[in-house]
Image 1: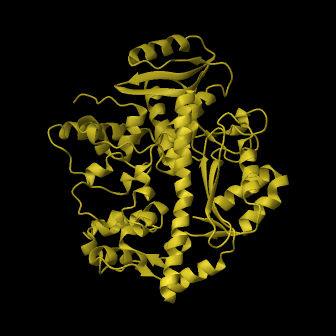
Image 2 (image 1 turned 90 degrees about the horizontal axis):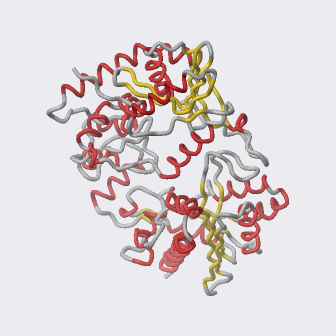
Length: 500
C-alpha cells in the first residue's frame, strides 16, 4: 500500500472526516468554499506577524516543489542556534511546515500559530502531527506550543506582540497523541486504498460542522428531500437535527407530528399547508404606539480584524465604519436620508463615525434598529473609547426600538420567512416580487459579510475601483434602513386595516 501524501491541514481534515480527503481527490468540483476572505486574511496576517515574536528569523519561502523547502530547512538547521519560520519536513510522505521553529543547541521547539482566541481540539491534533513527523525524523523536541490571540489585549500606540499573543505549552498532550496519529495515518491510507474504485458511503453527522463546516455539505446532502430537518431555523440545535435525521425523520412530512418546539412545528405546518400570514395585530399596535417622532431608522456595518489597528480596540472587536439613517421627522413628512462611510485611511474613523451619528440624531425620537444585540453594544464600545461622547451615545441607545422582536417572537409570520427572522427573509416575505427590495439585485454588496470584505479591500484598489465599491456599500446599507421603513409602513397598513 502506497502512503498517501498528507500535509498537516489534510491530516486535520481527515481527523474531522476521512471522506473529505476522498472528495478532495475525486470530487473537488463539488466543493463550496465556506471560509470568508476576511477569515483567511486574518489567518495570513496573524501568521506573518507572529514570525517576529522571538526576534530575528530565517524564513523558508513557499515553493510548490516541497523538496526545495525541505532542502533549505536542512541548510538553516545547520546554523544553530537560530529561529526558522515555515521550516519544512517530510517523513514517510507526511509533510509539515512548522510556523516557528526554535533551533537550539540541544534540541528544537515547535510553535504553531493560530488566529483564534482559544485552543480547540483540532489545534492539538495539528501540533501532535508535527511532533509525530519531527520525532520520527530523530529531532530532540524540547517543547511544542500553540500561539494564539489574547482577546483581552487593548492596543495602545505601539503593537505589543508579547501582549497580543498567548503561548501555551502543549508538549505533554502532543506526546500522548503519538499512537493515535500513527493509527489515524494508517487508517486513512487503508480507507483511500479500499475506496479507490467507488465513492465511500460514510453518513453525514455533527462532524460535517465541527470543528469546521465542510465544503462538501451540499454534495453529501444532495439527495435529501427539500425542505428537510436541516432547513429548520430559529435556534434548533444541530445535535437535535441529527437525532431526528438518524431516526429517519428527515422531510417536513416526517417531522410534522414530532415532539418539537412549537416554533419549529409552526415553520413545518406553514410550509406543508401553505397557511395564510399569522399577525398579532395587538403586538404590532403596541410597537407602533411606542414610537415617538422624529423616527430614525438606523443600521451599522462593521468589520473585525485579529490584529487591532486602531488605538483602544481589541482583537476581533466589531469596528463600525458605516451607517445608514432614514428619517421621518413627523407624521406625513417626506423621508430623508443621511449616511456615513469612513475613509479607509482615516485613523480616527470610529470617532468620526460617532460624531456624525450624534449630529444626524439630534433629537429624542425613536431610533429603530433590527437586532438590539448589535448597534447598542457598538455604541457602548465607542463610549468606552471616547468617554466625552458617552452621554450622547447613551441617549441614542435609550431611544432604540427593535423591529426584529415581532418576527423573532413569531408575532408576525409567513411561510415565505422559512423560519427565519432575518431581514433578508422578512423583507421579501412582506413585499414579494419587488425588485427594489431584492438584495440579490444589488450591484456590489449583498450582505454584511460582503460589506466588511468590500471595505477592507479598498486599500489595494485604484481610485476608480474604490469609488465603485464605496457606491456599492452605500447602496447596500441604504437598503437595510429602507427595509425597516418598509416594515414600518407594513405595520401602519396592518393597524389601519384593523381599525376599518
